[in-house]
Amino acid sequence: MLLLNFYIFTCLLSYTFTFAVFIPDGRESHSSVLIDDKLYFSGGIIHLPNITNEFFYLDVSKPFTTTDNVSIPWIDLTYTGGPQKYLVTACIGGKNNDMIFIFGGSSLNVNQSFVNLFDTNKQRWINITSVGNVPPLRYYISCANLDNGLIAIFSGFDPSKSTITNDLWIFNSLTLTWSLSNATNASLQMYGYRAVTLPDGNILYIGGNNSTGYMPMNKSISDPTPSVRNYFSAVLTSDGRIIIFGGYSSVTVLGDLWILDTTIFQWSIGKILNPIVNLTLNGHTATLVDNYMFVAFGQFGNDTLSSKIFMLDVSRKDSYKWVTEFTPNTTITTVTTSSSNTSFDSKNTSIIIGAIFGSIISLIIFAIASILTLKFIDKHEIYSY
Image 1: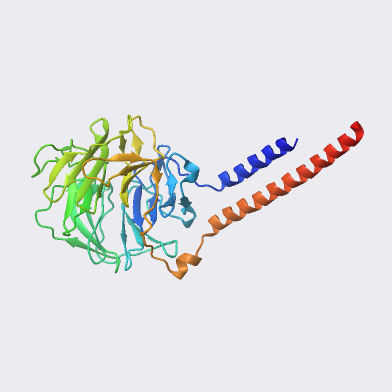
Image 2: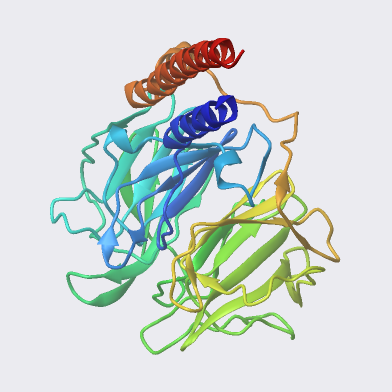
């Protein structure tokens, strides 16, 4: 009987804490951005064709293993009321680079703003009204950070005209104003590409589509070169490597890894020591955290949506390795203010209080059951004597 009570108690306790854990659903065409030790995710499509406004982050200041969903430190911020959009792009900005700006995208809400702003310190969304010229709605875009709080938005698909633009807009994240750039030698109009800001301040636009088909991946670069693609991911390492993964080409979802050495602008095939069988993704995001590329969510080659995080060790130039254990770099610094330390959200507070209360109730139930069991045993022994 005691063992039965202990089993019941363990189940109740496990249920209580499992209830308190947030585990995001699979999605694609979302956005991601890293600020200090928090990797934020917004929107996307879940369970096609449902568009979500889920907004959450992965706390990369804590160790975890990707094979155990409960151990992954997800924090849900959906209660803050984020935008319900997909096919979006996100960049950081503001005076201290602690603001998240989400641009463009498609939404069922016809009044959805082109730009959404989230203050990571106050943990709230801020309505902004840009003055002067503003870009028309577009999606399949990739924003790029420049110096002095500037963010570049190039080209994209304009749904109101069913056309691809080739204009370059600059957003000032300090003054919240737009300006249309007179970019000379602008590339052809494109969408589904990736924009990467190089250390010299230039922006490299990779892949995507134009009005006639796929953009070439081999301009001014010698062989070998990646196959044409869109909806892939790209990150820039501290030593000047651009790492691209996955994407979509014609009717094929890709799972290959390519490396662009920006010091000589030469492509090479990324050698993965332990490739994951049948891992192909498009519509995912990739973010560099320490020496790991976090490949998040997306759509697999079999059309199912991924709810996983795949981590690729990119610390070596000549080879790469998928890993499941993450240990944060202890030298990571975070921007903290009194507001961010004290503005703990009411929803998370309620969940934790509920978990604690549930645990206490479970302990009380266990204690009462144990006492009754002991009394039953004592009574049984008296009658059996």
